[in-house]
Image 1 (cartoon, rainbow, N blue to C red):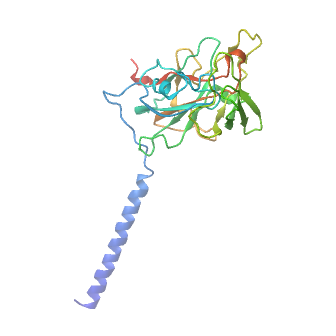
Image 2: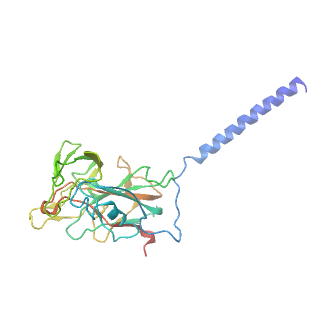
Image 3: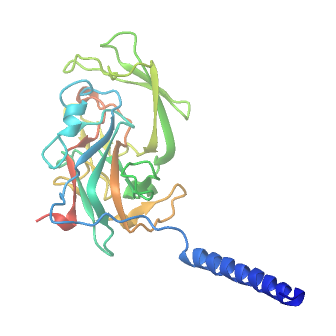
Amino acid sequence: MKKQQLKSLLLLGVLCAFAWASCKKDKVTAAGPQEAPIRPTTASSNAYVTTLFDFNPAPGQFTNTGLGDTTAAKGTLKTDQGLVSLGGWGGYIVVGFDHTVLNADGKTDFVVYGNAFAQFAEPGVIWVMQDKNGNGLPDDTWYEIKGSAFYKDGYTRNYSVTYTRPACDTCSVPWKDNKGNTGVIQTNMFHSQAYYPIGLKTNTYTLTGSLLPSSNINMDDPTYITSASFDYGYADNTGGGDKIDISSAMDDKGNKVNLKGIDFIKVQTGILANMGWLGEQSTEFTGAADLSLLK
């Protein structure tokens, strides 16, 4: 082969390799970031949450009882008839669906059940997560549902409370928040068990989330204490359940997040308050369901 022909073939090879690499690069760029996988609804899909991923109660009058333990938490799956207390502020439960709950434009998408009734609500903050990495675990980003208390004085994001094991099992549980405030989860005569979670090995633990204002609580008459509901957007806030629109999810800056659907929800006690003989304000969770699958 002549030297000139060899040079031409080598040059042609280099140009082809460059063109192939450029085309491959263009294809990757055009594809963009990978979208979160959607787990489709099938004939066997359950309308209700089916998996308990985490239960971390705050100290409270039902903690360490049959209404505030893991067994009670599991009882809220596949139904709206279970009942678990999340304890004082920050206590939470994380559950998941067996499919992706889709975000339907202009409609509410899922419902969270509690035991609120007229003149007495114990609102809990609702968080949602899409399984973006597709591993079936709630280890992606939580987004808070923006409820009506977002616009009220006393609403605080990035709030945290550290609870300390008390000197005795029946003693009130001390707490200190990240604003320098202190107080106790007050024990009462109706519940004599330990309020600090007995399963914890550490003498302190910290819970973090959003604090809701306690201004809806009225203790003017100590014999008839009321706790009015917020307008919308919280768990254990409305009798019969609270319907939630996925489109109301927001990021850590308060900006709207566009989610095609969600796979997991977290419900967390939102108010830090003692209500006299009624004990601490503690959100109750009885289940959650995909509205598109409810008959």
